[in-house]
Length: 423
Image (cartoon, rainbow, N blue to C red; front, top):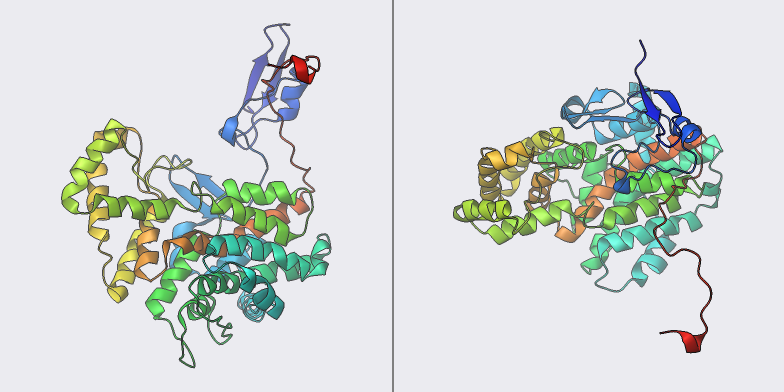
């Protein structure tokens, strides 16, 4: 028997039965019974704004899947570009498809010289790399005028390839500019992650070959961050995309959402917390201050996950691989002690507070030499594939332009008051 709920309007006694489909109920049926009555849901805590077949997330069970594939399997066996193809096309690529896809991405990594010389170099010397990236992505729309042809399949494909390919180039350029270092051109002989590291760290050598373990770690982190259902930046991409601008404008809006410390700055907050704790001996006292409500435990708990974030387990293992190359981050022992104490304390267990993906990513990035200002930029590079998958999906669904309702709590109608009579 189909599952359903029954809603009764106690003012009139009228009722309506609404079927439960895919874990949700239709607002259209709600409006039939209760026209003009809106579901008040700040932060979209209980509201599904779309239907999507891209990412499945079960926070209660700690499950994350891209197009049905468990994140654990993809992180172990796949590459970022293969995962990006999966998110955008719905299926893992064949060998031929992956070769063509990799070739297209690789040979679109260069950015227009005017973007570099006349745009990027126009920023103030201490501009934040993420602010530069937000602006640079938006500026690309003025260089690719065909990007506005969003319902032309070939044009759409070109913009998707361009964005995924150029994000690492723009990201590295933003960093190099902020450090007063010269721009490094992409090296198309290198794989995606290794090419990004080359653009970041190359100095005078003819060719920069990143340590394979570090390139692999970046690729794994890119896979883990490629998509995460309807988070703030993805929702921004879909909301802006619903008005049908070019994808660069929509992607810039998503980058801006990621710029916020509540979204893209979470791993930076973890580093600051661990630095403030200072030593393993101070962990118990810090835990007590958290329980008193005097401070926050950063990197624990998640808006969606109510158990151990499946990505956090993968990141923790990746961290050890990185530290074998870079040497151990001095904050690691504090992080491990903090995790040990918290996971054996009923206060945190009863509140279902477990480490999330941000708890260890900052340690990895810091050990590899990335400054904290680059953390949200490193997030934006892989998330571009997820953003574009959602943008493409909403266009294919012919989604309506986003226009949420509000509950008005302001003044009732009142008459204009002349200047001399105002208090």
